Image 1 (cartoon, rainbow, N blue to C red):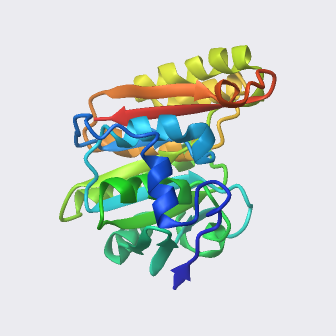
Image 2 (image 1 turned 90 degrees about the vertical axis):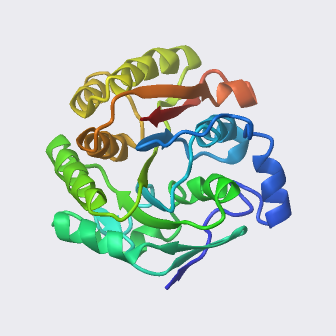
Amino acid sequence: MVRPPAVAGQFYPETPSALIAEIEKHVHREEEKRCAKGIIAPHAGIRYSGDVAGAVYSRIAIPATVILLGPNHTGRGEAVALMAEGVWKMPQGEVSIDGGLAQAILQASPRVRIDSRAHQGEHSLEMQLPFLQYFRREFAIVPICFRHQSLAACQEIGLAIARAVEQAPGPVLIVASSDMCHYETHVTALRKDALAIAQIVRRDPKGLYETAEAEAISMCGLTPVAVMLTAVNRLGATRAEEAGYMTSGEINGDWDRVVGYLGMVIL
């Protein structure tokens, strides 16, 4: 099964040379690389969120296996959709799915279902691959796409993912793909996103979930981030560090309807 790129030529350049040149505008190769348990990275077009995504990926050592968690913007497929086999085709080359880890996650949680439909046309996970491929040539992924889930479901799935990772033969990075506030003013986005970031720094999925609901923080990846935080806490995470934050207004000058972009590294 081959999953073709959905947003090549729109969110990022479609030729390898142009894509690499674009990525190099946003990364810092000299940054010290650390072994992270999880990260949060945005998924807008590289023009908009590339600086934040680049700041995150520049700081981490990418292992041979990466679990990708992202929101389902299209509404297609299962509510928690895991693509369990095949390859993702990208301008920089194909990326294989780690079928063994995928099956371990499926066995650990009945909420997770095999489904490739949710991944067709969805950009939230795809936007992580150009940065991952820039820093590591060979790696495998387990892509999971989420429609909105309850806090209890997020915690259950996060613990299931952690149990599967605990049985993996090597280190695994868990990537939560999310943008932050959507279409608020720049000032409002800064205030609301700061409330969410404070909970993420505490590595508190419950606090994040409840704050996002109480304050109407429209982060599209609330579910993936809550799942990731639950998993990395179980796996022994001790701290979360902000790698970058900005809004789209800083790129296009529209301060009235911005989207927030956050980068976090969880160690």
